[in-house]
Amino acid sequence: MSEDRRRTLLLKALRAQGIADERVLAAIARVPREAFVEQPFADQAYADQALPISCGQTISQPYVVALMTEALRVEAPHRVLEIGTGSGYQTAVLSQLCKDVYTIERFRSLAEAAEERFIRLGLFNITRQVGDGTEGMPEGAPFDRIMVTAAARQIPEALLQQLGPGGIMVAPVEERPGKQNLWRITRGEQGFTSEHLMPVRFVPLVEGLPGGG
Image 1 (tube, rainbow, N blue to C red):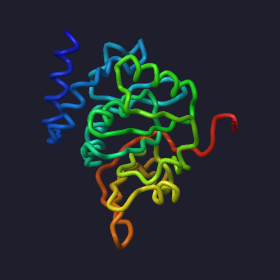
Image 2: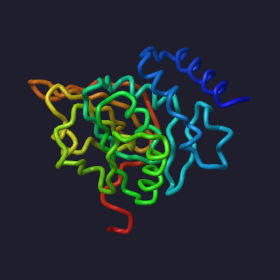
Image 3: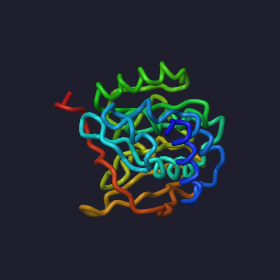
């Protein structure tokens, strides 16, 4: 089966699961997921499942990517901060929808591999940084939207403070061992409000850099 046919079937499956934002679906259609998966899993690029990548990380299930992107309510003028670049697939999808994406990855090898993919695909509105995702990117704040693709015990205060007025953050939280939930946090005039979206399973959000560097 061709990649185009697999992509068409995936989009059909996403619609059947309730993804209704045509801008999000179009963004997913434009990003070749096969460019972001490890070679041993190339034939599963359009399967609706998470797949392993290097450094013990994963590329998220397409439905979760679509749902998180839809929940973030990204608009064309927005500046979006992503915590956890990973393979770069979610980053690439976001880049189709907004002015600029700023993405942080704690593993240098993943960040560099993702940047090579961005260049190869002509995605030039992405700024990547190797760093501690729990600290965010204060030099670029405030952000209109923040997406976190790893689960913390609680949302880091630094990320909350880097969310601009009226901004939205989508993030998984590990509320107890083995139980994670996805939340949408909105910053209003009176503070932050939270909305539960769904149970999820993500790699943990870890402070610092590998090896303490």
